Length: 116
Length: 116
Image 1 (cartoon, rainbow over the protein chains, first blue to last red):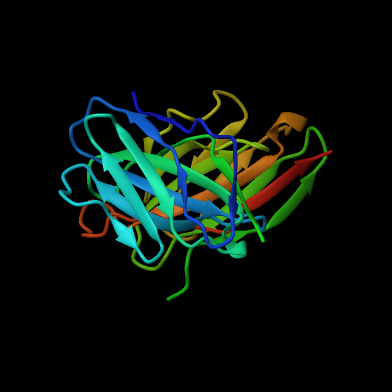
Image 2: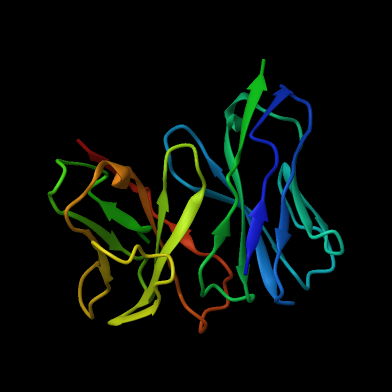
């Protein structure tokens, strides 16, 4: 069974600094995808970044990067140069297989607050 | 290309009434997923549908909940005889399916159900 664990209910970061949000996962399937989503106070789910289990390099998207450590089963999100608009809830998710089909399993989220 | 559409965005029902939530997937998407987000929690998978078929309903409560995705028209999540514990945000996502090359599933804005 798939499982996602986010151990940080809340995090604070100073504006312009970098922050790492933790995510560990568990699956018996060798083929899977890992995702991070941002949920601002308005409630929508915004896709940030994707990492496939067979990808050799860590994924990056602008200020977002995913620190993928396969042996540790961790997929931490790194946000560089934090901005006030980054204050939101962040969810790590996983889906078995590497296509767009199938259910996703989400962690309980981390609330990030960026301080001016 | 319009994104995933959900309506209504907000729905208020009294205990015992029925709630109908609608989801129109992105154009060209034949796979639909429903998730529920209770307050202060992550998204929990409910059901995965293709046109006229339920593929995975392992997350659906055994009673009062049903879902369909007809050949024509939106996907419907139906909750009969609502109770206060059904108050949550219900998200729909869609994807192309295994024939597509993208890994991404696209989320709608959600329907916030409040049971009074």
